[in-house]
Picture 1 (cartoon, rainbow, N blue to C red):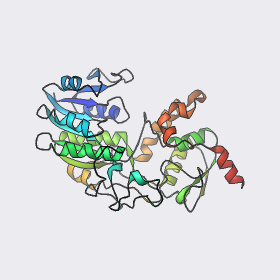
Picture 2: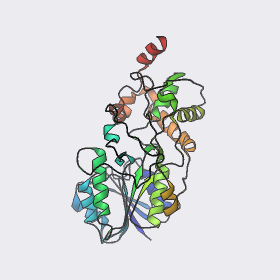
Picture 3: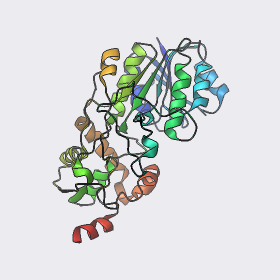
Picture 4: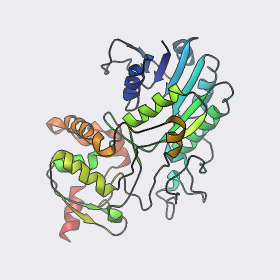
Length: 341
């Protein structure tokens, strides 16, 4: 039986990836900081606790007979060197990057989003050959590029597939964008405003579809960079309508012609220009077909979010990272004042 090691197995993408590989006949070692404490995999999956910064522990975990290494949490050039040092002991690797690495060719990218005139103008869709930001250590995006470059430089000794997801969604997310609509519906808010006429598109990526890409890449080892998103890129208005349908509620949406007015109209998908990834390379090279559409994935996500918020728990306590990125996501007082004006 082929042996796979999954680093970051307890996370949002790691969980369905472990399941997909196990179903495909891999003997999976699921490594995470919790060591499988919160996961409920069957006996075919071995769970271990791993401190990613401990090179000796990672080396011992990989051993001498690792056919596949999947890394969900690799972040920068240091991790690239850590992984490439294991070349010769690993059959192939799949590593998660991000669509945030893309530059629009004029110095605008995810790092300039909030600067005046700094929103990038990307082609629709964005191919993997599009320019990226320079590698470095100054931001999430530059570090991911440094990771990619370090891995690809070792292509001769370590076949590696780099996957670039978009707006990742699904249960166990630390940044569940769908909460914007789910919590409003749970709170009985039947009116909402959407900036840019609700036409913003930030290509979603189901954790289950990313897992399918990992499974497909594992079956076809090679060195490549691929976008890793869903089969469709719905608008924010379409996302809201789909969540309403799952929750069985009717809402009234006010469309703003332009940007948000303060916090009013701002959502985790609100962009003045589309961010849509080209998935044709994954289809061509891996035979990729999404295992779930965005709408089909929502019942599981909505149920998970509803359960997390049960008993009146504060959303900021439940999702501290989301609250850090979007602190005014539920500023109902500002919305009420805006509607009353």
